[in-house]
Length: 136
Image 1 (cartoon, rainbow, N blue to C red):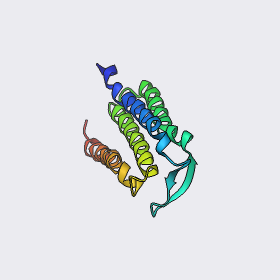
Image 2 (image 1 turned 30 degrees about the vertical axis):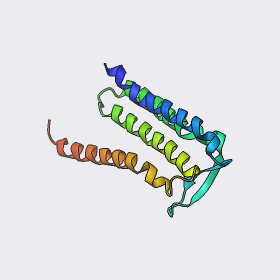
Image 3 (image 1 turned 60 degrees about the horizontal axis):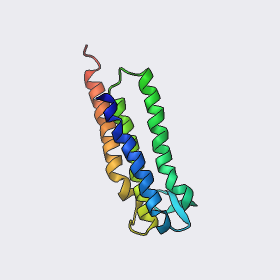
Image 4 (image 1 turned 45 degrees about the vertical axis):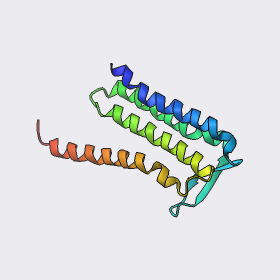
């Protein structure tokens, strides 16, 4: 059963890659891939490479954290961290495509749900660790 849960992040990676591949023709030749604090694009990349950037990072996180799970089996939360990071990169993919197609005013709006989940879970983990530190 534990292995079946791995299908969630794998499915997100595959879905993000397919989504990008399906929309590559709708994107301008150069796609904004990074934004400054004001939300203005400050780095661009060829669209045929840009659509593989977020799924590539998602795959990297998946593999790296899967390797870490072998050496840190006592951390059951590591699976959720892996899934949340992959979910964030899938959101980055969608936001990149929607912004490139002119359908999203700010890419931050596209990744906000994943960022809220990731940061919220991190805060919850820290609070839980602090509350249980002296017990045991």
